[in-house]
Image (tube, rainbow, N blue to C red):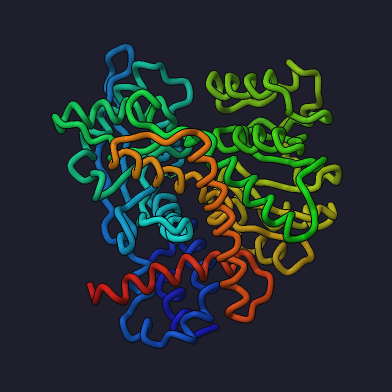
Length: 449
Ligand code: 2IT
């Protein structure tokens, strides 16, 4: 490995040893771009890497809200504005009990390179809170969102920082956040958030974009291997917003999702989750209870296996982890290898531990990295920003066409970047290299700060 890259990784490991997820993503991205630093000694002279691993700005704030009984509760809110070299900070908000500084930084770091890959002018950011939306009433969620935005609104804006949704933040929460932003600012700037409702500046296809984009990317991989989506069986972990888009688009294009999992275990539907009735049921199930997918098995009379993950089953063609970080560890990766499944397409942010990813990449399995596969979500967010600034809205067909093209280009650029550095067909390294090069060059040209 390039000595400069090695040095910076060691420094991060030492300095941020308590931030496990952040150290993990830094190691993964930087080790992939070692070859770029070999060719660009000027980046070392300009200290690009040391600057890239430190957020431009990150802050936390107190968020106080009252429950339905009038009792006050205090949570911590975060926003990490990691890198603004190529555009305003852009990235979602995650509301989940386990959110901490390390998770915010890992997500914002990943976001930086993912956003660069979209080819659109967006920098990397992420935010959220350790607020747990599970079991909260509508009123409680609204008051939490209002309080969260009251703390954040001075530091975001359409040209500054544009949050969106992530786990625990969907269209409903974005609505409450936007309402409060408008109320505090006293002017109408709907470009400050993406993932909005259609009635106040949201984009068609944005709710579906991450899942649709993942299937479009998968389609590029398959085409390149003289293969097709037709008749393919897919195992998807998770049943949130992203899995929903995957399930819908897979069914539309002749494939089918046959395994799906939640925190309580997994379901196996041999016939596939292909009907509108099944897909709508999942949407409702998620809204009512984000912790259990068992009701699906009860409703449609299929198998449910409690407290297990399905990694290792042989009767699928494609695995798509679409739930949460570090879903697949070495133990699961070994099962995946033994299953003989041909494609491992990451969807959730960093769903694979570094050692598990290494094992899969060194095998015959075709591995695609989440920062490329899930980039369609934020890509359509950037299209939403364009529509807002032009004060118009594009049709479903227009947005879908742009999304398809974006995923095609992301695949092509990643593949080409790896080839340019003599790495062969390596979509993981290629995505890191392509994203990194764009951000590094922008920082380099803008001078030292
Ligand atoms: O991880 C992600 O890319 C997102 N949660 C979407 C971010 C966005 O700004 O649409």
